[in-house]
Length: 303
Image (cartoon, rainbow, N blue to C red; front, side):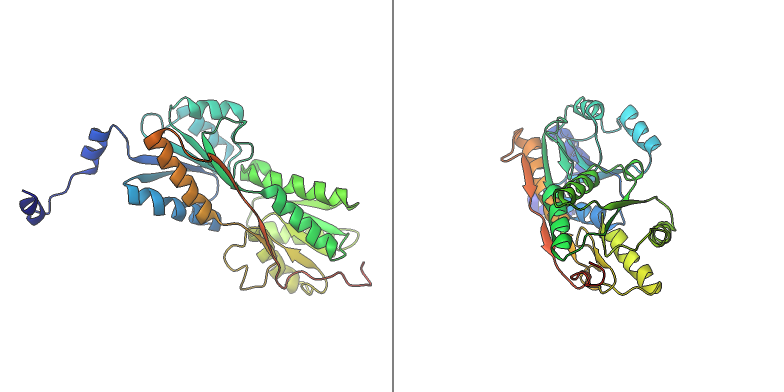
């Protein structure tokens, strides 16, 4: 019988398998970043490495505006059509968490702050508090006191993890008697040019710039060099993520491993689907400072 089935290239359909198991064999991924960006692409890669091997499809819902966010939670398209929901770096409030919980499937977070408080079943994430403190201590340890922090608008990014980065960085600076200046990069094609204009408008150019993410730091370095500034002789620049090209341009940054975190999130997801429980449901990954050539000790005439 098996030989005949093999000769006829017969295989059990996915729908038949789902019907027999009582599962949708589908996991929903809710994210705010464009899927072409480094973090999103890495998360998808890590999830697929585990879920696809176990027969699960990944359905991606990208939320890039407040309107899309409201529509998703009002309609809840995952209801009865998924076995779990994975939320990546989105500021899910208590009401939205309760709406997700109403689907009756496990809710797993990736880089979501306070997942226990907001009712997640499990979560993984980088220690953004530790990472941001490493950034502050690195710059202050090099003698920098005139420091600018460049961040995105929380309303635009919809990402809670980056808020933790900012809060922890500012707190660590204040503890050392340093008050950083904050510049907000609004979402636009010219956002880096706008930041450079704001930097040039300051009473004095900073000796160091800390960026919320490498996606800001890398193009900012390029534009500062175009304006005649030497990195790091004139201005030190540090990023966050250790993403594509960070090594190539010598960017000092904080390393996180979204592929590894996503793989771990996928394993916890399968545990919760199959066994309703998982070991160490809430797991934090340590941050790592990667020192390269974009930061240096502040010049004596600028200290």
